[in-house]
Amino acid sequence: MSTSITPPDEIGKLYDEASRLSGIFNDGQEHLGYWYHYQEEASVAEAGHRVTRKVVDALGLRRGEHVLDAGCGVGAPGVLVARETGARVTGITISAAEVVEAERRVHAAGLVGRVRFERGDYQSIAYSDGSFDAVMAIESLLHVPDLSQVLGEFFRVLRPGGRLGLAECTRETGQHADSTAQIPEQFKSNLLLTVPQWLSALEAAGFAVEEYTQCGPRVYGMGMRYLDHANELDEILVADFGEETVAALKQGYRDMFGAGPRTLGYVILAARKPAIADEAA
Image (cartoon, rainbow, N blue to C red; front, side):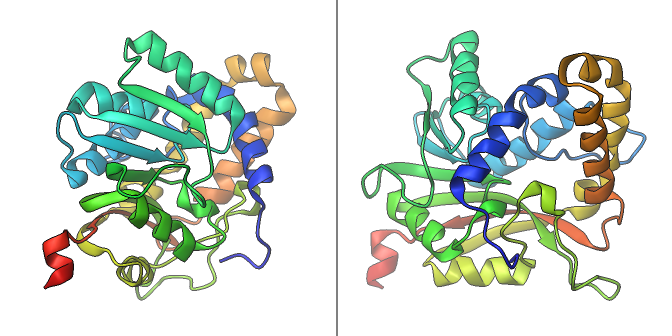
């Protein structure tokens, strides 16, 4: 965890500014992508869809279930979930600009009534106990100042037997790992854990971990594809955002991904809130 905690309003401002860029850059998939190898032709958006689908598969979502998308971004993952699984989706984000764009996507997809997005803070979720069958959080917990509080909120709003699906960058622990590695300051991260630390945190919150996949080389390790994509879109991005912003974007990708997958990894993880019978046993 970083030494200084970034407050929620500053996180909201970060995503207010990023929301328009994500629509141009990766079709609203405000998280990393999954590639099988660097030369693969899959686009940034397609690779992002893979990560969303891997979280969905780990959750085992079924038609009619109600999913909370905690840190929903501009709504692209939530819309994909509703369209491909038949689940209902409620998304929350700290960014007012993201809510506007996410609702636009709902209307464009013809999913009004099945998907809704609203401004909210996952540190204090405005829903009653047991409201959801599943919670997903795709690269949104890196901003958490108090992980135990947030996991406690996820546990509370899940029904007994409900599932939690996460996708996050992790600190690597292998022989050549850098124990001091950090997500660059411009991304305003408050949290970077190893996989064992994630497992411990979830178990401490009452969850039973059921599945986790470490896929750092195919996700974080492919991050320079984002710099390639920014170079491909250079004229469009400069015309819309200006040379200074685009230059900062590209430098951010170099800072984030230049060290390679020996420093940071990536995990997709599913856990379950015990059913009532399990709790009584």
